[in-house]
Amino acid sequence: MDKSAIYNILCVDDNENNLFSLGVLLSELEGCKILKANSGKAALEILLAVEIDLILLDIQMPEMDGFEVAELVKSNRRTKDIPVIFLTAVFKSEEFIKKGYRTGAIDYLTKPIDDNQLLNKLNLYIKLFDREKTLKELNRTIYQRVAEQLSSSRQKDYVIIQQARMASLGEMIINLSHHWRQPLNTLGIIIQGLPDTYDSNELSREYITEMVDKCMDLIAKMSGRIDDLRSYFKSDSAKEAFSLTEEIAKVCSMAEPLLSPAKINLEISVDEDLTVHGYPSQFRQALLNVISNARDALVNGQAKEPFVNIRGFKENDKCTILVRDNGGGIPENVAYRIFEPYFTTKEVGQGTGLGLYIAKQIIELNMQGKLSFVNTGEGAEFKIVI
Image (tube, rainbow, N blue to C red; front, side, top):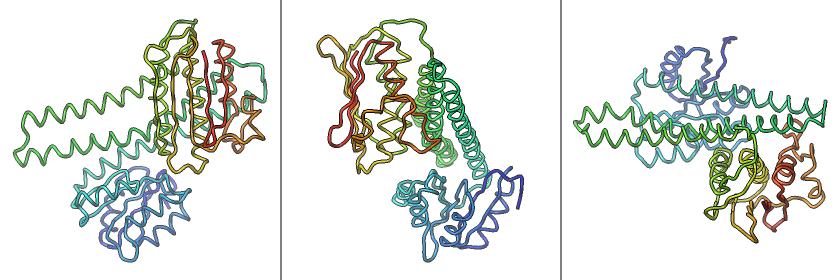
């Protein structure tokens, strides 16, 4: 065993020659250990025994094909987050490519594959995985530091708020890395398609313009995510008049990477020209905490079509924001405690119990508003009035 290996890559192919060739090629990847399986069953046995970081999966195999293996991997709580890349020389039609992505694959490559192209792709994925691992470790460290601060002094509210914000920021960054994978894949497909287009004499000025526009649109959206994070972390120096409509839109943009991995639909209906006086950055944090609480309820719930619905409107000269979900609601035996500091229903180490407490402090103490909730039958509805 290579003790310096950081990433375990599992190659699955029923053809021993293919496995050997792939193993030789992938040995050029720095900091990786290559494991091999010649069947779906053997692959699943390895997954139970070894922590795998990436799976390269052939499709045409006896007894259990690659699609079936991928579905089993994604249905298992322990292995569902392992990235899967399909490699196939047979199943090249659009129908099978779509099926591959539906099973949860991050890429679908058809043979013959250029060795340099495959190595470049894998190096790109490994860099993303490396950043994701670093961010996860950073997130765990942040939560640990928050817990230490809470045990030493419950009087330092400002410190608590700042560190809770860092914790949620770390989680957002982790989900952002997941959210970037699809546009990065699309950019890669566009770039790789240029040589084929050139060889077929279809590389016209119009085609180049169209591809450039697509690439720039993807890059602009990815850049927008970074701007959202920067605005979230910006501190407020004094109260100011700000557009509630715009701030809700920013929060929803930040919340999307938190919700989409869990397939939670975000529904938004906010009136135009809602304006209040207060702290925009703190408001964003409060609203994001409420949305994150709804997300946690949905992830742990049984809703078949989970959603978070956000409405914003003016009522009796005050602005009202309703955040509703179908996560089953808050149990009556703990409902009266949800705004208490340090109270959480999560397992030890999984939550600080500060999210809703901080949201209530911001809305009611700092912005002289009101934060409350009711159970709706299908879930919970939080109400912010400013």
